[in-house]
Image (tube, rainbow over all chains, first blue to last red; front, side):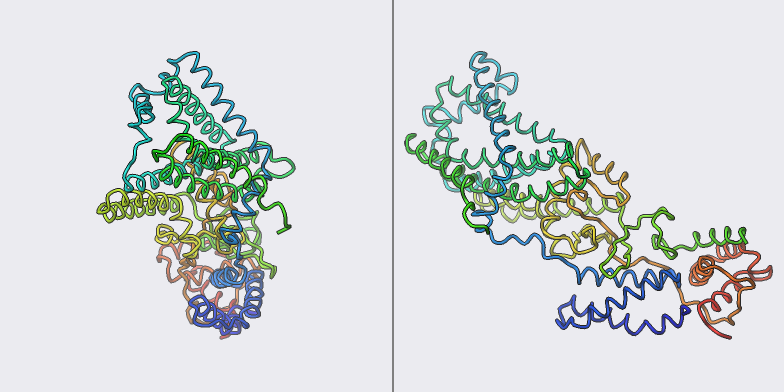
Amino acid sequence: MKLEAFDAQGRPRWDRFARLLAALERGETDDAAELPPLYRQLCHDLALARERQLSGALVAELNELALAGHRLLYQARTGEIRGIGAFLARDFPRAVRSELPLVASLHVLFYGLALALALLAWAHPDLIYSFMSQANVTEIEQMYDPSGAGAGHERDSGDDATMFGFYIWNNVSIAFRTFASGLAFGVGTLASVTFNALNFGLVASHLVRAGSAEPFFSFVIGHGAFELTAILLAAASGMRLGLAVLAPGARSRIAALRAAALSSLPIIAGAALMLVIAAGIEAFWSPRALPAAAKFAVGAALWVLVALWLGSAGRSRAD
Amino acid sequence: MLALAHVLGKLARACAFGGVRAFTYDPGRMIDTIHAVQTPEGVDLALRVAGPVPRALAWGVDTLLQGGIALGLQIALSAFAGFGVGLYLIGLFALLWFYPVLFEVRAHGQTPGKRLMGLRVVQENGTPVGWSASVLRNFLLVADFLPLLYLAGLVSMISDTSFRRLGDLAAGTLVVYADAPRAPVTRIPDVTPVAPPIPLTLDEQAAVIAFAERAASLSPERAAELSAIPRSLTGQDDPRASLIAQAAHLVGRTA
């Protein structure tokens, strides 16, 4: 068939398809029964026009029309989260447990490094000044001043709200960056974990020496359960990306990266939610001037809660 | 005949529409930026992927817009002291990480910057981008930034045939041109059809038709230059009119 006859014959149904598509996209009609047969006919016409090389302009026009139909017909309802409750109660703990070796290794790395640095700094008290400026150290000392003028003092509620916003902005962003920079062969993630461990170990050691152990640990223990665990979970998902690129196994690097990225999404999403909870605790609970014993008790309870939640939630039923 | 095939091949390449394959669909034959998607109907659809420059411009527009929104948020919330600062920081967080995700999933794959540049994010099979893919590709922009100024992303884009940055590779997405190609095509004018003096192959017929469809939009000099190539087809006096008359015959008109 020649171009003009082909065009004259097909034009009415192409126009009809275009009109139906536009109406469906604008929501003017929901009667799509006619769409699939028209779309199949359009694909047939496109293949014919291309095979017979009727005209570049016609092929381009039909291609664009078929693409619009393809977008509408084959759109997937992917990534619909089943509801935050089900996610937190089942999917997230399960995803964390499926990465247990990685999560455990990162915990060992973080707390091992922090402890090593704390001991080293205990033996060499000046070590902290190699990592921080004098002003920074003084600021931290004042924050956890045992006389009660620092973090333990009562702030007004506006300050708490400001700090809540700051912890979300700062900590969740750090978690996302820790995750994403893992793509660079895991180097970005490891650097972030190492840096945080060094910082934590040095500061803890310095404050214990300065006699601020109680205000410091009673402040940190409450939100630490959620915050430290979430940061290490973000790191685990980042390392999953890095390992997929470094050691893709039987798959191509891109295929391995894709599988790793999809499987680590629930972990990074859950870690972000944990950090929001941590921000709430850190802003509204940790700075309260309460007896240290009460804060240690609540903090310990939160650690047990996190461990139980991630360790056992979602184990029972198949779905 | 071989020589004719050669010159018609040149004509065909000169007349090919920007980025649209007018001729046989053979990925090995033409070097261009078409990403083919095979549909369940067994037909290849052509997606025109976008390169680094329009995408960088779209990113620039979006970044400016994000800055503007952040500024507006700051001014609007400055009245509420402590709570205002807290809300502002949460807004800043949402703006930084979820502005592109929200637009890509909710606005047909287009952030305002991409809409301005005529771009769209789609899944690799041409369907609309979903939440998980959009979150992945936008969060991994951090990895594309490494080691500085999006160098990793740029290297990834220029070494991939579909211009995918690292985030696109991990999420299985593409950035494509959203609008139909601006093909400067007109109907072949009403002239008396003339049969070509020799039988033409499909490729050659397609080249002659493509020339006739675009003749009106070419400058007279360019049209003369192109139509002068296939001498054995046109004769000497008016090669342009001669090619158009033959095209009219080839599309099935009768005298």
